[in-house]
Length: 115
Image (cartoon, rainbow, N blue to C red; front, side, top):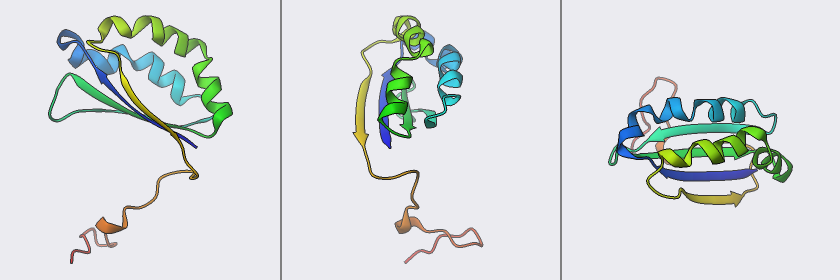
């Protein structure tokens, strides 16, 4: 799988509207057959920073994403709302989804296993 994390620094005047600004791109990407997830989070320390966590099934799915019309549209439409070029970590990993974080295991009753 291709696992990507990107940080987007949004201009302050657009920060509260960023989910709406990126909505078409987000929805179109999530609809791609090779997209495993495409999730935005807002930083709790910096309200102008959004973090995108995304994954694609394989190199072919990643190439289809970058070659899509909605990706080209995002390249035109999103940068005017940004304060800086996004930062990215992109890695191919031998995994096909999320794994549990065993160090914070939660039992069926909903409480942590503690130590």
